[in-house]
Image 1 (cartoon, helix red, strand yellow):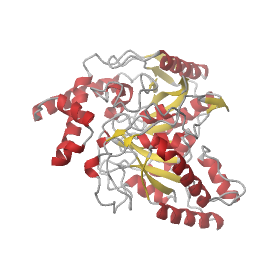
Image 2 (cartoon, rainbow, N blue to C red; image 1 turned 90 degrees about the vertical axis):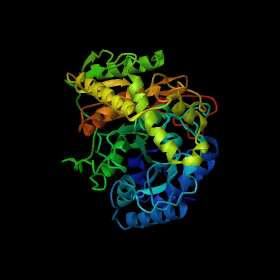
Image 3 (tube, rainbow, N blue to C red; image 1 turned 30 degrees about the horizontal axis):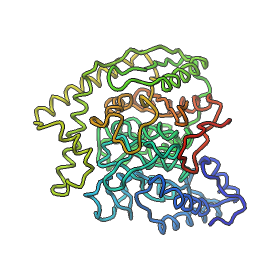
Image 4 (spheres, rainbow, N blue to C red; image 1 turned 30 degrees about the vertical axis):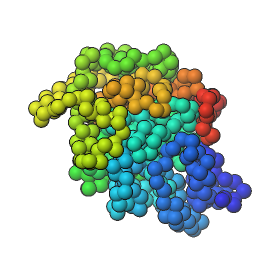
Length: 477
């Protein structure tokens, strides 16, 4: 356990932790042992951790401690405890993709690009976080891991599919995490858990296998911490054949905007389909819009972009993706989460022609969605229709468990960067808003999120002990 007189506090920022490393009041080894102690305390309650390699983590922390003591730290993340999602390969740790049929696969022998970049930066990978089967649910229910719970209120979901990442950050377990996002899977748990996450421009954060819609995304408790992670993992990796070249200013810090006047912000409160947005979420959205307007932004209302039937084609694409993975397990497919199987089977028989037609419809809809944003610089929207649903449920609509991802999923289709940031509360549950910008505007979106975060004037009262009864979300900054 830590021996220093000053120990990094659970729930602190990366900057605060790094300051302790720099002045010698604490060390990376101290931070790791604090993490391990917290994990031992909260893991039986929230079920956020899928696997650990504490021996390797301790070696990495010890090496980082020596570097800090010798004044040769590798960079801003050197010695910082982090996690990666179960679906992100990390040498020495298993890849299970949240599903029981994969239990027993050998440990990874090659790091995925985000893991490799974290190791290059000296970050200490504590372990991997839990997720639902195939990453195809926006909740934390898994045939392999069971139910993941939200530390703000253990009766409700932490969201998904980066479920364990969101829960572990809210409870102060590590200082950063890497999740993945195909329909909102870093932004949804960020919203449920009161943290910050970015789904970057497609290709900005390399990942494997290359994808036109799935992206790895940094998650942390503050915008500044997400920005630190983004600068590290958002670097070119030739293994991802869809990866973008490095940004011209990739070495520069991402600071909150000092002046937002003149930015054109379009407020999107209705997608035209899906579950209705509740009053607490609309109230939070209006509050964020008012803050931006007061700062000098030109705020306008955007019309609903879609009709009620738009989701059918997108849902079919998700079903086909899930069905392909289900069928790959052969006889072991019977071990997959039954509710997920029911959703897949409810689609009935599908042909290649059905899939091609759905692809064409979604392509047309995503172009229409992108075009409707042409007169604004930023889209402000909810992340979720409402703040919470039961931890045991597959989604807000259990028959179509990704339907409530309506505000997040289309930014995967268009490839735009989108950030989830907490801005309100509903009966002890955090409520978030989403900021999305044009492709390649990741730094601007993060900088605006930093401005909006500062405009709240208050900080979150982190549930460092998981709460069985919802309490306060905010404390004065």
